[in-house]
Length: 221
Image 1 (cartoon, rainbow, N blue to C red):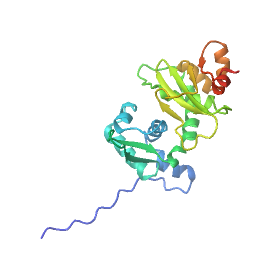
Image 2 (cartoon, one colour; image 1 turned 30 degrees about the vertical axis):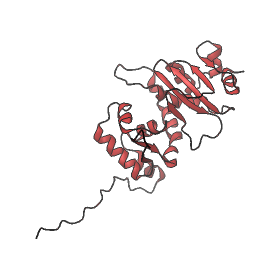
Image 3 (cartoon, one colour; image 1 turned 135 degrees about the vertical axis):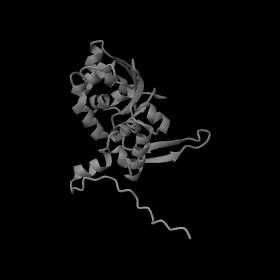
């Protein structure tokens, strides 16, 4: 009779084992790559292959492990898209979307380190959504703004309450309320509060297109 193997215990994730809110948070998001995966999923549901493509340097094993950890922590879920897509995507839960202000604050703290782009630096257009969201915080009129950079396009939501919605997204928006054309350096300067978008438009450093109230507000009208 074959010897019966003892039941396998679930692997316990590493913990700081400290009764501290910051330590508990780092138990969930303190591992390398986790917050950058959150950054990607804040733009909306993504397939595993798309995540891997926009996270240069992460191995397939590490990405799969982090996604599994995020599911176990209630930060993300995996779901199957209906036909004809027939693909699985990962998306943030409401708990996971609550990390937006954390990422925004972290990006603001790290902005001084972007004084010079290194030859080895990867770049994606939507990575500039965080400083631009910060720059447009407090916009009176709510809507979707399409942003065009030399590096590509993305779109963001401004004004009002975006709870439950994606704060930003990949590529052009289907029906934007305004379009902004600018460069990455100006995005960072706006995020640092060095000038407003209306001032950048007046100086000829940015263009705002659109006829509605949101476009007019962004132009400073």
